[in-house]
Image (tube, rainbow, N blue to C red; front, side, top):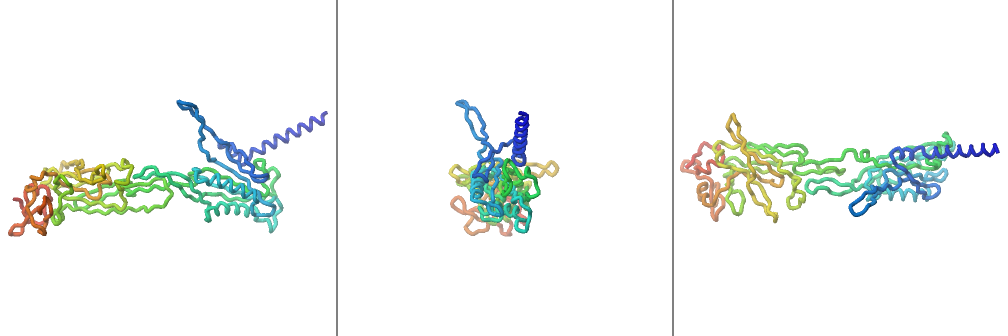
Length: 442
């Protein structure tokens, strides 16, 4: 009777020790992360461990619903078998690798995985023939995953999204080189207990651990802004300030994109520049006198007709033009592009602020525009048709400064017998003074 009791105690002790050993190593690490890994046997020697499906119950007004938080595992492990002395996996091992690949590299899998590969030998005394067996087994597992993309790296495509200023949230696949850790272990000198892991013999195996780790996989997401920094364009008369990312941006992408955004700038503000090729501010129904204009042409700019998310483009591009003393009472305003529902462009007045310097009494006109109001920003004044003769002289085609309007030709100035500029007083108040000393009003 005593012998039976002792024998029962020994069996119970063995079961307790065995159960304790099963909870060691990688699966215990998974438990520390709140995961319970469950084995799925491909055959007697090849097994995949993945978490139990986590379900989250939530209620609605109609009925309770059960939904899965994420169908793809946060962590998955596999043990792949090799024949004794062989560095190539068995048929069962290949089946296990295929199953693991289909699960973790699915194009629907939104996890960002890194991988650890550990190769083990046959627990035999090391010799010239088997000295690299554990390493070779780890290498062949690595090559299996790399060969799926026919590259020297392990490549994964993960469905994600980026934010593009003109379009908004855009789904796409992030293609990245998977981080991996590479190890190999000789088992000859370790104990029988150390040759077991998760109740599986490590002899003749390779152990694969795949874990979700976006920070390690992606690092910092690339963010592209055009312009890449706050940009100020300045000419002889005007200043245009364009904040970083005002023209466009793409955030959260691993793609390599041309980062530069050259911006061409031109201003036509002087009397000589403006009158040598004069034209009214374009408008079908109104007459708007042109007192100067700025042209801003960035290499990258949004297209109004194909941009669904236009609200992402605030009017934060600042335009400033100091005006001369005779222009201060002329009622000049900025005119920029506006779009009709059919997409037709019309130049209309933009809210214009007057900034007065208390010390010098000089004035600066300022407005805020969106990138849709590039390329040309005009400075001018709206008048009635009957007022045109107060500003312009009749002209013939080909005369200096002449332009076509009202079914004929007009010009903003004329030359007297001495070659002096003669400008009508209302026009004189609109334009900057000529650089030539010959300048008088009627």
